[in-house]
Image (tube, rainbow, N blue to C red; front, top):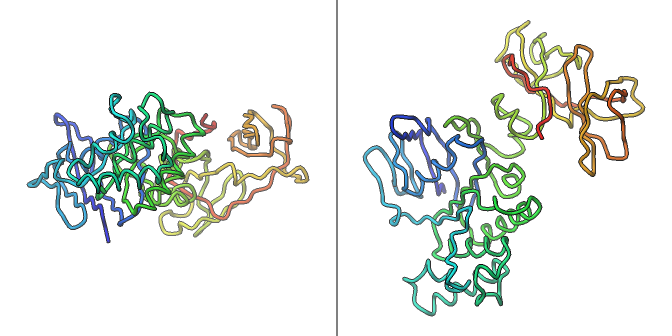
Length: 356
């Protein structure tokens, strides 16, 4: 059953189009995540679902109920929507227990206490119910905010950059914890973040947005291995686009050799194309006779990320275990392990350097 259905919505502000023909859905109990650069429309999309932003085209349904269209706008307080914000929005003068209670004052006192006890156990804060927000760590505060949002058993939970104030390792750990909590509660959720690792840790489906458009709504695996747009290919993970020429159906000639592609009907023979090459396509192999020059390297603790120069001057990325320490200017052996090439129409401004 679909819990959230967004169909071809537009939203604008002062005649500027902010959301452009967005369509996506989440089934009951699924977790979705929106990725994209600042200003791409991610938060505006959350606001339309919450009823804080009108739409000028399309429709939004929560379950079977139409909540937004060109002729319908259900008030925010009438939508069973929970919200978690990046600043937590906890009341500093209320303790943990009363912060959670704030969202369920319409429950009986017995129901309130049962729900609070259940949620404190769920977010691993049992015994801390009398503490105040300033007495908690950032991760604990965020779990209180989550418990408060879940207290009223919302139809859908919306989270806007909920982990942005935390350090990187804690963010990813908390994302995994939150996923477990949401799955336990059976809550459908949609989150906005800039952090890909967070998105991959928490979400069943991830959407990449740019300039108000939802370019791809898919699994994390498919976004990485089967991007359908050059922006998605560049934004997700790391990689470069090198030039190629379609030689025949399902094959393309590049400086890396003749590569198979699973896109057979979209390109014609001799068409110039761009080919996505990920770091995991280029395997460091000291025994290989194919040698490429190291032109840059970044130490990542467990591995190096090498930038290697091809014979025509194009550059590709290669990961190698950290004990393989090769200086800039040296040559290293590599092998190619690419199941199929992801191909796009030729991009003139091909990104060649790794994103830090």
